[in-house]
Image (cartoon, rainbow over all chains, first blue to last red; front, side, top):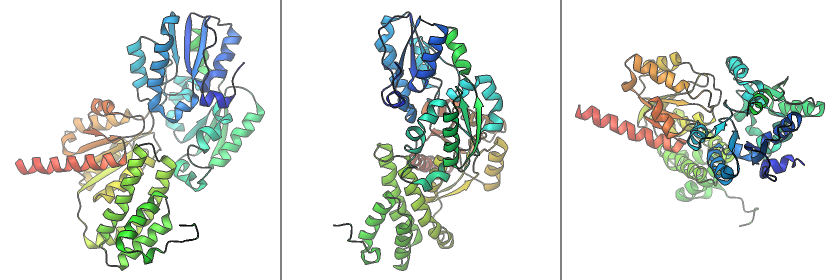
Length: 211
Length: 233
């Protein structure tokens, strides 16, 4: 059973009974997508554990948490793969992975690998005034955007944060009209134009399929 | 004291008023800060003293509590907004009264990046510390930085980036300065959430500044080194 989004945000996903050869240590924001890919493709060799998605609010903590997770389970697996992109660690996560001898997913963040890193990079010049949300972040908009930015208490701060943005791009991993409506409402709350872009799982599926 | 006991700022003596302004800055109360600044001006305070003793003093406490994880970004923004209100009153007066100028900084967010909260905080705190600040805004290509450094006769270049994808552009700017033989004419400070000390060193910046308070201290230190080396040359 997949934990609730709140649990994935606050606590992550504990490792179930170990069965596979390879352990995926992922961000809680990717748990549903990875479990879906695993089930669809019958990747029984992959086990999954997730760190709390809320680490994204404190990117400086991600590297140490990943290190601790690798140290905890490395002896039980042939290999470990880190399902984080750089995610605001400024290259420190990549350096830590190199040092620990584990691989991680390429790219700056999940917005990039969901769209496909090459495609995302190609659009960067035209879209740097865009703010991105994924399925998970639309569902957890209040926990990741509205409340941490203090907009629940001080809505007048909105334009200090988002005044330079023009558009909210909802990168949809799934076709869910209710989620699209929520994403559109998020755009309205931020005072931004709205675009829905179906990405599916992008590079995430390709990379996990190659393990 | 109950909530009904409203504090009348004009009834406080100078010391109490400055202390109250620290509290009001901490709480992000812009109108109260503006009122406090006006009261101190009416009492004959020099604009520079109000800036440094009341506003910068208060923001220094905000900065320290932010660094220690007691305050978070929204509270810092509210405090900055309150300080901005006070600065708006003082700025024209500072120009008239010839407040001491520590140095001149050109600052801007790099090309492809629109994030300016950190940059704006640094700019404001640098002004508070007596630096003249030329803010180039967001999305700056190398040419814009170099033109401004030359045109303004600046001492310091400050570059900011929030994104892992845009922070490498700082190296483009610094490399261009090296190519043009002007790198050593300027102090180059860099900052932004995904940066770190190692990155600053790797791209050839003089220093990485993790927050606005560090930026001010670093700028002061490098300016005094610059003066010292100019004297001994």
